[in-house]
Image (cartoon, rainbow, N blue to C red; front, side, top):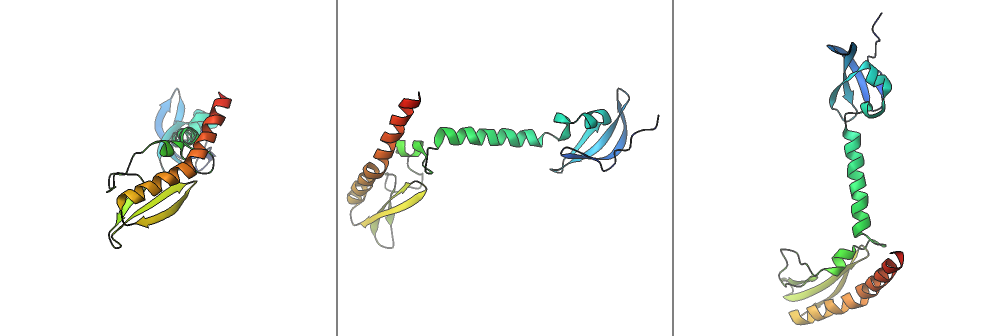
Length: 161
């Protein structure tokens, strides 16, 4: 029986390039190239069968990655580009000089700047002579912007449970 020529034939995400001397239960093992550039070896029977053999595994890795990102977004992200956990915590960046989230020293002006992020946008609250005034302004902005949003979020979360 004449061997099947699969040279340059596509099977899912891989292309058969050349037969090897290897056999698997008398099936010819082909050297193949995946779309991602990886070299894989598949028997001609598994190539024709397709399914999970139609790529090097990179597709499953990408699917797993996308699934994890989706789950991560669903856990952390609420509507309007707002991360609930960011609103709930007072964690400050390592380079923060004030010790308060959203307040930092502007050396050029010799003032303390307060700002706040909400719904994917950054809002400038103001520049202040005293650090305490910047902190007060920041806390006021949190109450005005974040608190109604969080209250609504928790109210809706209770209804879904």
